[in-house]
Length: 128
Picture 1: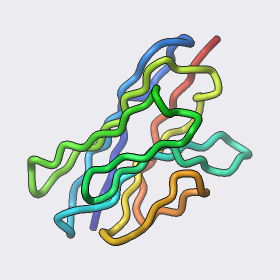
Picture 2 (picture 1 turned 90 degrees about the vertical axis):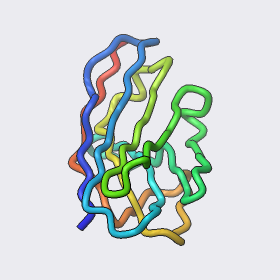
Picture 3 (picture 1 turned 30 degrees about the vertical axis):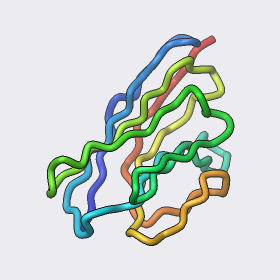
Picture 4 (picture 1 turned 45 degrees about the vertical axis):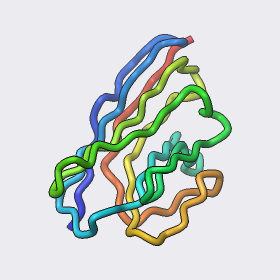
């Protein structure tokens, strides 16, 4: 069973950077659709970035040019997903979740995310 564990969240000032890491283990498929979404208490989750099985990224308009999703899949049994976040803004403050879906799943970042697998989340706080 696929397990996802995020790390790397924290508190930064506006304009700062953070890199989130997601350790994925228990892989069943050779490739997955990967993604990050975030959620603020009382609000719907918001898609941030996604990567299809060919490694093509898509981003929410709110983070384009600032965030970068990447994947290290050199190990067959464990993959590591990253989210490099630069030029952070207070409105980026949220709980960030790593997520995955089986190959062949179409993920549209702009839609409310519904993922088959997700981690426990890591908190990001950006102060003005």
